[in-house]
Image 1 (spheres, rainbow, N blue to C red):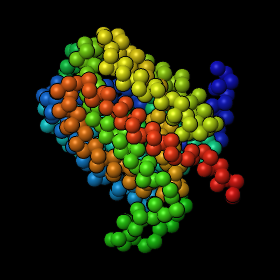
Image 2 (image 1 turned 45 degrees about the horizontal axis):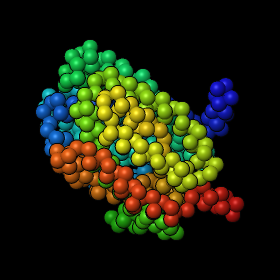
Image 3 (image 1 turned 90 degrees about the vertical axis):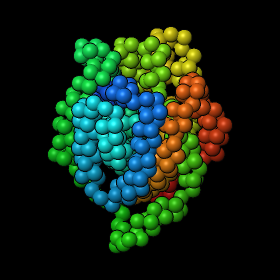
Image 4 (image 1 turned 180 degrees about the vertical axis):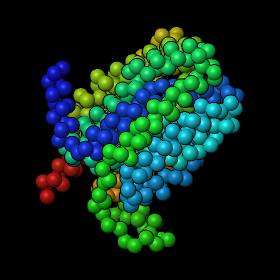
Length: 423
């Protein structure tokens, strides 16, 4: 244990100040996520939203996320990242406040829109899908050395999960104290989130160093926006296949994401089952993320994803086949095991050069948001017809489409090592 901590200390000491500040900020975000993320959909239900309405809110989220994706990616490559990240965190605080004061599900529409455009704590958008996560991903990638990137993202992922170590149990206690699993019981969590979020927003403005842009753009014109995006594909291979694979993942996940908590609730999960699930999820993330990230820096990102792939199938099957609420804890454990999230982020972002990463992220988010617009509505329709079916679709799509694509792609670790040897 002491050897691991010493290694972690040495790793952090050779990274930039920005990376360490970003880790601290992500820890604050994780506290809020751990407190609220499991209850967003249930809260929508308790203030009047039907299953169809929940699907519509998810669709609205994806629509505005798609609208913002390319402008945000373009801004990331051109504008001060510190200001963008601070703006996104401010908007996240506003979004949580709207949730806190809402007494009808329609009042959540502004929060859904602004969180899709700029980002939100505990957002229904998948990792990397909004300005907050996009800026964080690019800032983190640019703040790390090439040889440390997978491990750096792994540590970032761990800290994003720290809040899940104890916050879900605190949330369960608070909900029980304030009136049980109901709108009244959940509402205080959002007020607490605003109070916790504000100091970390201030930290970004006060402590983060402005990132120096290494790429100079031609003079901005009405057409430069499109030419800048066209430039992303120049000299880069495999990007279209990466877009297809990522879109399939986001479509199937968006179809399911809004209904996981609802499915657990209908399987008689109590606030403390939700709380223990969050705890187990975080423990698995904390224990396995760093070894997995070190494995990815050793054998490659692609190979690590392939080796761990069966765990993704266990995650979904354990949710569907759980005979009682207690068995849902297996699903929670598999959800926490890092078989893809930060690995896929590292893998995809390394396919382009650093000066293109903001626009590349913007393109991915555009396609992801577009294909996900109707996914929650389709998910709601399938859920009402036969709820368990939507949780099997990600497994089938992964086996038949995503894995064959991944097998064809080169590993970015080898690509970077060959580029380094040329230099």
